Length: 64
Image (tube, rainbow, N blue to C red; front, side, top):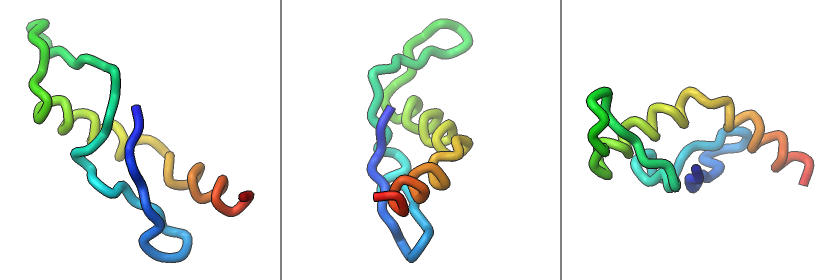
């Protein structure tokens, strides 16, 4: 999974486009049906929001 991010103010990073997560994952419903791109984007965006990626990105930026 990957997504674009930007520093929106000093020390604060955010996703550029929450619906623009790129992945090679194929998401399926509980019934086993492949989710459409918009449906998948919603789930992937929610997943990214739950990850502690902002702190890790900021730590890497500060070390660069």
